[in-house]
Length: 511
Image (tube, rainbow, N blue to C red; front, side, top):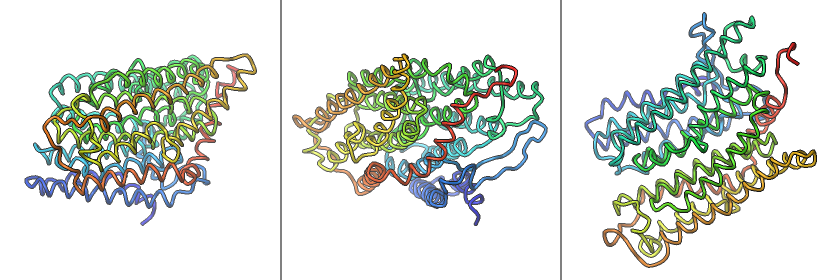
């Protein structure tokens, strides 16, 4: 089987799995087993594609392009490149772990829930693989529906409020993106270009600065909501708190990366001149997100909210790395996206496991878990230290490269009299300190101290739970100790991104 056929199988396998669940829908155990099997096969196939991917070859690999609506220039175009390869692997990797980790968390409408998880997996994978802007937008919109249902049906007591807020924010961003897409294609047609939604064609377009500025503003608002960046972040804590454990894991592990991926794949390369105009504002908001998210995490009493606000802080580093336009910073941003997906998934799974036993998320209700649940305590400390950025973990690799890139890019500007990038880079370092404060405070109360539990003795972790957490732990250390392989896969794409955003692309008469 060719790599192109394999890639399409990876994309559509969850849809096949959703159809198969109709045959076993009345047997909850069979539903879970079937979903896990489908997700596992998808991961194995994605791993094969990752191994086949050649990071030294420019352009798309394993690509498929079939005309869909020729008169509009729309194609079914999917493929792998250095920007999406790690995110595709991350999405496929987390799929079976989400289902296994929350095996007993969902007890009502089990088949419907797993159908939604599979369809969400399909939409997320499609958004990463799409190489046509029309197709990308369809997958971007499709992600909203299953996540809305997952929170709205299986969420907590305030799930209606959380889902409405989630939909209003994301729908607003989607409308802005749709308007920008239409305006972009119309502008190119007015300039005499043939209609096309292909990324490869759009990235060559030359647009006046005022057009680029308008379009980037719309794209940036849409992507910033998804990241989310301050001040567009308020939907995230409510969505996380009310979502069931699998929903929180998917949201933190993959969905939040859609915003940063959108900036890297579309926003900045399509409108490079406007990007340089917006860089001071976006970089400032990124650093505000790093510090403000950490400060909010420091004062939370709901354990889910601590991790939710920490996500805002960690993804601020991704934006800082991309905006630095330094090779180390850009690659660090990609590694940070993957690292956050692994670490946040582990923390939310741990929270879900303890919630199943204690039925409360209040931090003050727990204490001394290292003595009650020693294995749980070990895993919790590992993921806590990974979140803090302890050397040898993936969190250190991503944050170190981002900060290295930010300082490397800021110093020449400082010598030229522009001190803002250096001040922002120095301020971003405080996020590391604050991260240690809120996570170690969390661990000190949660795992150590006097023994305390909401309902007496807590049941030990099962073999299934230990296996899931063990797999995530190995992946966190593997990325932290051996980042060279993933960095080689992404280096050429990072250099291409750097060149695209650094090169002026105004019309000849506008220079």
